[in-house]
Image (cartoon, rainbow, N blue to C red; front, side):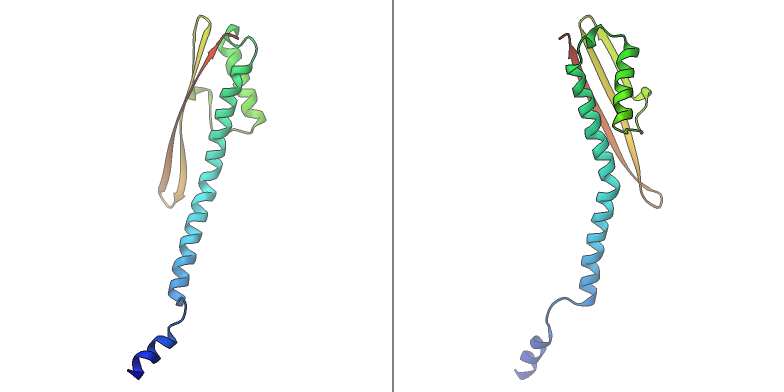
Length: 128
């Protein structure tokens, strides 16, 4: 009986191994957040850029090239660099312009392991 109570008195808190595991998990998730957050910020920026085209006066009367230049200028201002003209598809049908954006973000995780994030966004612009 005396041996059992002595055993429990010496067991207080985490062991060194327990702390190493906890710190390793924290570092793992911090690293994951650091490499993924720029991609998420870029995606939100692209969503804002495409949605802002809805307020552009006379957008449906512009040519596909002029619409692309508007998008490209806004991407330059917002420092979006990983998206190219090939990722966009602009279709005009009368007073309606549909813009489709489809691209993949490939993030190097560690070694030869990558994280692939597929993005699809479409916006319908109606004559305003």
